[in-house]
Amino acid sequence: MEIIRIVKGEPVRILDHVETLPEQGFLWLDFVRDTEPEWHKTVEKLTGTRIHDRHLQDSLNATHPSFYDSTADYDELIFRSLAPEIEEAQFATRPTAFFILDRMLITVRAPNSRSVAAIHQRLVENTIRMPQRPAELMHLILNAMVDRFLAMRDQLTLLMERWVTDLLDPHNPFSDWLAVLGHRSQLRTLEMLCEGQEDAILSWRDNTRLEIDEQLTVRYTDLLEHIRRVTRFARSQQAEVEALVQLHFSAVAHRTNEIMRVLTVLSAIFLPLSFVAGVFGMNFEHMPELHAHYGYYFTLGGMLLTAVVLLVFFRIKKWI
Image 1 (cartoon, rainbow, N blue to C red):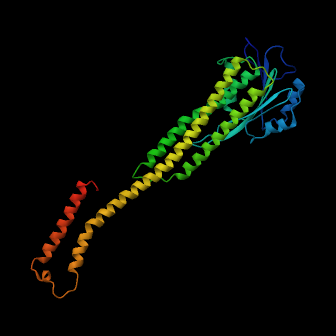
Image 2 (spheres, one colour):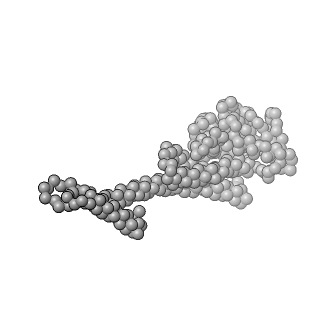
Image 3 (cartoon, rainbow, N blue to C red):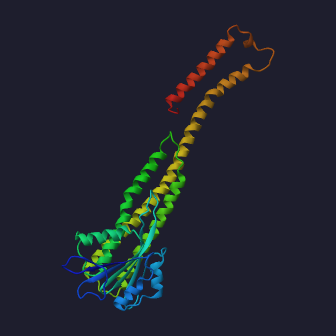
């Protein structure tokens, strides 16, 4: 557990322990879900506020979706964000539980949370606008989490461009369709996550017992717009995946048409040649041409001339 005291006009202080709430400012209690499952006892001892059993279970559930609920004493917001173990076109998510009291913000998170660590460092180094109340600090953390989703866009866009380039390469047939289908599944998951995030924040903003002034409303509206941008990106990427599949079928059909055109041209050339060969291959007794001294050479020459004329004709028509 980390205890951080934030007071307007004063440096941020990291406390070893605390017995009572400060007279000014507010506290940020940051708990790690896996190692501090009984975090609620610290909160109850400090504030007298009892965390509902269901909310406690929500905070310890690593698979919980984004969600909002409240009691007369506090608001609970579950927000799923990216986990650090992100790979190419693959990502994992995990929830962070926020409990907002009048003069306290509680976070229950997984270990190695980059967003929480980043906000913690910036607060200590005083490189960020100091929050005046718990809801503002929660906005800073949520904004850092959403920005990690936004940072994925360049990576996923480059991946899509690479797939398109590979697909149109005639010398190396594209075969990485398992990755493409997995990518589409990831995008659908991302879209659903963003929708859950938006619903949770909207529910909190519209139903919280806390006072939300115009300044804070603008900040959360901006945060919602960031989430919607990720949602639109996920949807557009899904459309591009569908277009990639259609492009694949178009490329396959084009290659098939090219092959069929070559085979058709060859068949058209050899058809008259086969006819000539068939005529002279008939076993009639009286065929004057069979006894011509230069008949063999004239026939081969005529066949060659026919083939050349057909090739020139097809070339003029741009069929080959």
